[in-house]
Amino acid sequence: MTHLRYEALAKRNLWDELIQIRDQQRKDKESAVFVVSGDDLPWEVNPMGIMRWYTHPEVHDTAVRSLIFYVQKIPPGSRSGLLKFPGGQVIHILEGKGHTVIDGVKFHWEAGDVLQLPMRWDGIVHQHFNDDPKNPAGFLAVQANFVHSLGVDKGQGFELLAPCPEYQEKARAGRRQAREKTD
Image 1: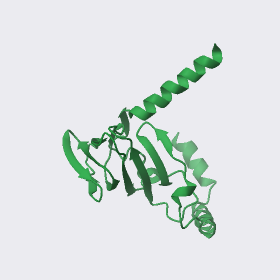
Image 2: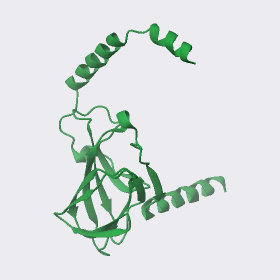
Image 3: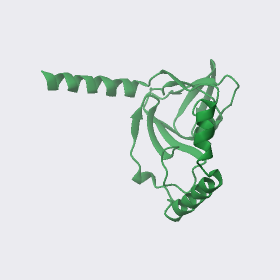
Image 4: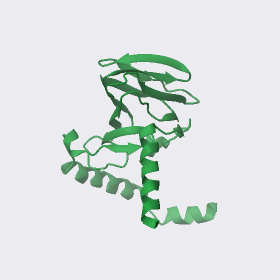
């Protein structure tokens, strides 16, 4: 295996490849999006909740790709998915009131607060809850984008432990539609 790797690397000029990457990055910056308008972004229902992604490791047209940045809504009385991840995220509460459980400890928040999810060696387990049965809660979340350098796990794991109710309902509705098509 080592000999094959050596032969493959010997056929390449890694300096030139680095220059090609630089040139491509410069070209990409010429047409990069500098203002990301929320009106131009779809809402996504995924296992963690209802989210709108402003920057993401797989969105390549933004001027800054070093951050992961999204807005999340939690419907009245609902909750996000339960996630184990490395941490290192800062959350600004935009609307509503609720709480977040981090490794079994409850932290209350309301609009205007900033919640900090710590980065821990073994990762953290967290979930957000909207404590208002009548009004939505919403927050903006940002973290460093290390996905392509350290991996999504960042050595601590990235595991969905339980999906949010909205995603479960979307999945049930999809299964109902599939059954209706076959009947």
